[in-house]
Image (cartoon, rainbow, N blue to C red):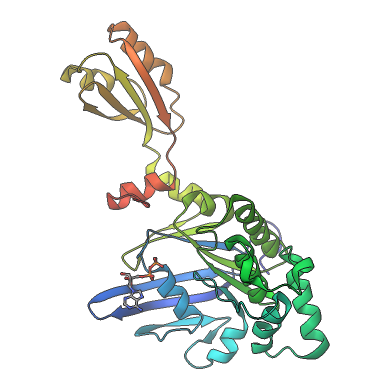
Length: 323
Ligand code: ADP
């Protein structure tokens, strides 16, 4: 896999996307996008609704055609051998895709059967997948009355029974209860621990931060930033925020004086609120408070915020991930 002698680590790419474009009429859903996903990692695709994540995933799994560019999975071009490249992947689509008039076991057997599993092996793999998703006692039940979270877990069982090397999950936690959400996040970690490469799309930055070793931030069909969460956050290391609200409207001079405090990178004033940006780890909160106290500005409220991936997105695009 990834380890080598001494300290050196070689990253082998398992999915290689080169100059990929997909258009729907005038909409460029994926725009000349290139990306490499390494074997054994949990790779996050983070972006707002409409960014192009599902379109990208649907091309990786050959569910839709590619307009321009190429995708290689384990060095095989998806255009030249889609059956083979599909067999390397298991997809958990955004919209739950299960048959409500089949039992859980029948559902998993149906999907795993599409990948060529038959007979005893099919049944045992299907049962293993149900066990993994905590649904083995529901094997003979019909999913009709299941909660959204349970249906999603069944969908995951359907995607993993054929033991794919790459699991692709498209917004798997949208609209489900917290318990199932937690179950899904733990399943992703466990699948990865067992050796699966996971591609995980979300517009919830908290999930991506928790799960993913590397993250691509996608906007308007393009990768606008790529790296580990530490690398991405370093884009905004000057953006530690402290908001101070005082009794009265603030004079312009305060802006200039606050900029003299070590670590402060910018100051903005909105009526009686001051927003002070500082370099990460500059530990100047006490100095900022001391300034307001020394000027007798009567602090009403203080809030501080360490930059997160939302800050990164906001800084790069001027927009929020979620509206
Ligand atoms: P995401 O998964 O990030 O929410 P999508 O890939 O679903 O984004 O959509 C990217 C863009 O392509 C959006 O503007 C969306 O409206 C458009 N789009 C996606 N699928 C279709 C389709 N089948 N027909 C027309 N437009 C589409």
